[in-house]
Image 1 (cartoon, rainbow, N blue to C red):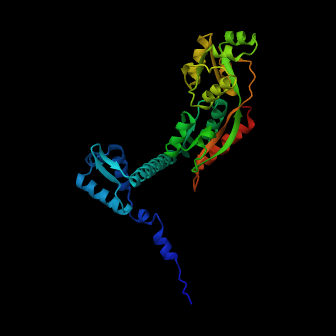
Image 2 (image 1 turned 90 degrees about the vertical axis):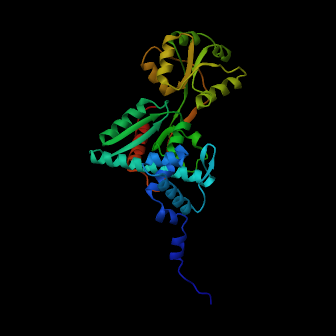
Image 3 (image 1 turned 30 degrees about the vertical axis):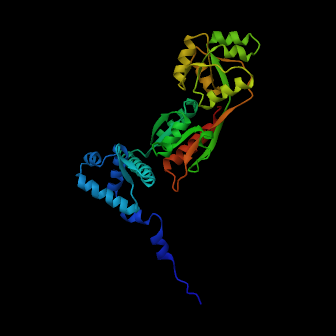
Amino acid sequence: MTAVRSSHSDTTGRRPGARLFSRLKLRHLTLLTRLGRLRSLTRAADAMGISQPAATKALAEIEDIFEAPLFVRSRQGLEPTPLGKLALVRAERMMLDLDHWGQEMEAVRSGRAAQLRVGAIPFVSGRVLTPTLERLCAEGINVVLHRATTDQLLKELRAHEIDCVIGRAAAAVGMNDMWHQVLYTQRPALIAHPALARRIARTKPDWRMLADVDWILPSSATPIGNMVTELFTREQVRPPVARVETYSIDVISGMLRSNQNLLSIVPEDIALDMEQGGGVARVAWEWNWELPPVSLIRQVRDLPLDAEERFAQIVREVCATMPI
């Protein structure tokens, strides 16, 4: 008869992270982050305010924990091994999480509920962001808002530099550590100086005529820039070359106001905001496509942040009740 024994103690000791849990210290993480940036044991020791022998000993301890070398010496300094690269990424993220934890504790001590770092693409209207942030602030949650393209924001999200993103989920396809929820859709709109808008309105829609106008556009790597290229190509017209490439709404608005031969394309809700500011007008034009939807993109977490959960709830409510 085969004996059956409990495997509880065995599996506990064999967990992949058991050695890290029992032996990895904060000073080890600090040394790893310094080595990742400085690639020199001497400079890392100086940055930490410890002696080089102490740094050498700490690195030996780390490599003993990982049971493999994490760095090799080269003319350029210490180069991480494949295992070392993984250790550097994880150490950097853990230190950022600790820093965020410290910021949250400081917020609580000062009477605030928490701090949340939010990334949003420039083409998210203030009609979404303003009421969302106002409600968060009213509940005592400090917010740090960062604007950039979705691909840049996702890099920051994965590096734990921000907590969540309002962007285009198409850029997050294939990222198993991310999940998204669609907030709203956007239609494109042509926008120009009012004089140019009137001039175009008096003519028969003509893609070749549009191609001859000066354009200010986002980069071709962005959804709008890419779709503009596809639209003109589909009509067998050479896509226009942007005089200026920018995602900045302020720059687009300012240049359209001062140039009667300049055209741009932005989401319709952004075009409405720009019109209300004066000096620009939408151009009547028929479209047969929509932009990728705007989504809330978050990391997959075992335990979501309370402030992040509240933000997600509020931004969904704002998008559901306001005409976008």
